[in-house]
Structures are given as C-alpha cells and as structure tokens.
Image (cartoon, rainbow, N blue to C red; front, top):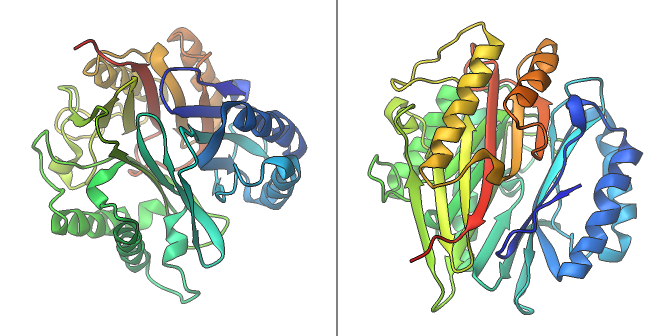
Length: 379
C-alpha cells in the first residue's frame, strides 16, 4: 500500500499493482484493508472517500472481503466505497483502489447517511473542515428508469440540497470525479446539464477566481446501477487558519470551459501546514482544445504527461510530489507501452492505479488525473 506521510490532515492511500496486473479479491483485501484498518487507528483517522476499480464480476467478493477485514475499524471506514467498473490492464479482477482519510483534530466528525447508506463524512481536521461524498448518484436514484442527462441533473440538485442542509455550498467543492456509463453516447448532454447547473450557481467563467472544481469525467459503470456516479471533496476554513484556493491554468492547453466542459484544469488548496494540488483528468488536447496525436498511443501518453507536469509547475510542484493518480487506457493492447513509458518518464514508482476505460472523446486513448501534496509556500 502507498501511504502519503506529508504534512496536513489528509492521508492518501492507494493500492496500485505493478505492470497493470490484476489482483484477486482475497489478495486485494489483504493488501488494502487489513493495513488500512491498522493505519486508521494509529493515525486517529477516518475515511473521507474510497474508490475501488475492478471488474464487476468480482465486486461482491471484494466488498465481502472488505467488510471482514475492516470488522474492527467499521466506524472509521463507515463511508460506503464507490466501486467503479475498471478492469485491470491484464486479466480480470481488481485494478486497484484509492482512499482519502482525514486525521481528526478532535471528535467533530459527522457521518452522512441517506436512505440507510453512509454516503459521506464531514470531519474537522487541524487545518480545515473536510466533506466527502461518495457516489452522490445514490441521492437521486429512486428505481425509476430515467435518461442519463436527467439522472445527472437530479444528482447535481441532490448534492446542492445536501450541502445546503449541512451548511455548505457548491462553491466549496475542490474536486469532483464523474464516472459515466456509456460516456461516448451522451457526454455532450452531460456537459450541457453540468454547465447549466454551474452557470445558475455563478461558477462558470474563465476568471481565475471562479470557484470551479477540478474534475475527472470518464467511462465507468457503477455496481449500484445508474448512468452518473459522482464523488466529491469540499473544504471549509477554520477560524484563524489559512485557507486559500485558486484555479490553475497553463499555456499548453486551453480552458475546458472554452469548449463547453465545466471544470478547471487544476486547483491548488493552500492550508496552514501544506498545499494540495488537484490535477483534473488530462488527455492529449492542444491549446485550442483539439485532440492531437490521434491514433498514436505513445504520443498521446507522452503529451498528456507533459501537460500534467506543466500544470503542476504552475503550483511549483513536480511529478514526484504526486501522492495519488489514476491512469485510464482505452485499449487493453496499450498496456505494455503504458508500463514502458512510465519507466522512461521516471514515474513507475508513483501510486498510479491503471484501469481500462473510455475517455470522453472516441479518439482519445489515454487520460491521467493526479493529486500532489507539498509543503506550504513561505510567506
């Protein structure tokens, strides 16, 4: 297990098998959940959110193994994980997992339960308040068959209402992860719904102060059904503690809002003891928003890695500062090239989970998202 030991309240925990190999359910549970339970107790931490990427065929076995392994830490890991279809690069099974936990400064910790499911958590750390919601689509699904865009609209409204009940707002969201079943069939509709919501909330604009979150939008079927799976993290300041969030831009790619997609290329959150840099899902897009290196996986991957490095540099960060990342390959046959390029680029030791998934455009073969953690800048 990769465990970040950087300053700050958040712990980033990942299982990322080498060479895009698969893990069976039992091996995955041993490597992920047995040490996770011990670590949460040792660090006085609770899970804010968790995503498992794996074949749906093994999902129930994985979740059963998780329950058994975390029997002694059930309260600390009470938030239901988001299980997303994401086959490993090789074989079937589990591709990996990411969890984000919060070191608690005191006992101010509220579990968010909707419809009998623990779908989120609000925790006070030393630097800030943290709010995580897992599979927010569960707030909108009622068993009725709906169009994908209508489910998305209902999901975003449900999140808005939940945040309002908790005394939070949509503008405090730093990071979103959208997993959309059959993404290539309706990504345009998804963007229109998200754009309308963000525009109504005053969040859609190019200005650097616009509080638009970093985001990933990728294909992914949810074990629980539905078209739209949404995980998110929001933060709020604690009196007297530093809390400065800014939108990151760079010259190599234009803003996603320029071509109708409502997310920031990245977000930097500067707190009292550290900085978090959230890099959105990044692919082979040029400064005009055009897909480039079409048909060439290696060229697309190298261009993507260069774009991620460029965006990190705007926050004085480097690839070595990455503490959690997910790589999405459209084609299984590119897995060997993926592993070779990671080695060439000096990134093979980073906690990157590699899974198979369609990117938001049919011609895009690779996408990478990442989170970096750094010391706070000197004043």
